[in-house]
Structure formats: structure tokens, C-alpha cells
Length: 251
Image (cartoon, rainbow, N blue to C red; front, side, top):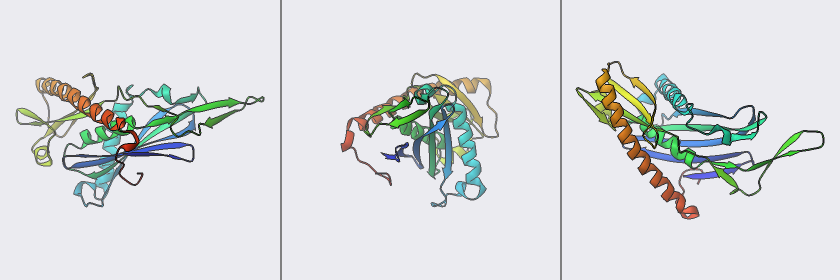
């Protein structure tokens, strides 16, 4: 996990998340733009490890599917966009999140949502001041102190729980083999309070209403436990301060 300041305009934070055989890396970046604050997410599929799902158009299609899912989840009030505003209706921060898929080993959406939330947790918004001259033109002044930042709130950022229906049961944290046995899965985005913010069915099979309600209940329970463990880990690492181990090319 690491962060840096580039040209006084942008802070980037990188985090790598191995979850089972699914390995993802998330990076968040801020830049000053004119207009309204917004959140953008891009998915990149690595073909360096020769994972079949990432070859050719397969990687592009998978990346588009994941990006569309994340857009639905994070555009439902999970982020406080007001905190990205610098000068109302004039200047704002635009938050970009890039996710690199290094390996696909099942439970991919869950690993990506964890990487995104962890990267957002480590995102710091540089403190800026808006100066106005006698003619009314405004200029943005960035603090010279790289530690003079505001932490982005991730309290309402959900995590995705994937539940795979196999026979009359459903499985959480499925492997590739278990996913191959499932004809239908339910993606449930859950906040730290157990509130379901979004659902999406994937797969060619069908789900009856009773199964959906059971899977939602499981998703809520597992989601709250996941948030608790993730928050504990993130706060523990943050408490280490400069002593924490930094890895990756941004270290």
C-alpha cells in the first residue's frame, strides 16, 4: 500500500488484494476539473499470467461487465461527492479508481469491491484554498504540506457478496470449480450496517423468490462480518503510520 503526490494536482494510492486465487490491485487518483464532482471506475485485465478469461476480447468484456456493475453500486449515494467540491459549480475533484485484475480464481467481484474500498480508505484529498483577485478571477492554491489532507469517508461504501446457487443450496466465496457447478449467482452489495444497496443476478439459470430472500439474508450477514474484519485491518495498518510496510512500484 503506498501513496504519493504528483505535480501538486493528484494523489494516487495503490493496494493489492489477494483473495483465494483471485488477485486484484486497486488504485485511486484525484484530479482537479471544472464541473460537478464525480466518481469513475476503470477495469484493466492483465494477460501476463495467461489466465484464459483475460485473453483477447474476453478480458475487455469482463472488464466492461465489472465496471458497469461497480458504476451501479457506487452511484447510489455510497460516496459523499460534496467532499470533492472545491468551488461550487466551478472546480471540483474528480475521483478515478483503476482496478487491475492479475488473476481470476473465483469470487472476483468480492475481491474487487474489497480492493476498491481499501483504496478509497487510503485516499487523501489535498486541502486547497480558492483565492480571488480584484477582477474576480479565481485561482486554486494547493497546500505545500503533503500531509495537509482530508480523509475520504468510506462509511457508506458497500462490499459485494457473491452467492452461487448450487442445487437447493447457495455458496459464499465460491472457487472456480464451484462457480462452474452454479447456473445462477446473486451479487449483493452490502454496507457496514447490513443494508443492501444493489442486487444483480448473473448466469443463465433462474432463481425463485424464496431462494433470493435466503441469499439476501446470507449476504447481509456475511457482508457485515466482512466490513467489520476489513475496517479492523485497515485501521490497524493506518495506526502503524510511516512504519507500515510499503510494497509495489509506488512504494
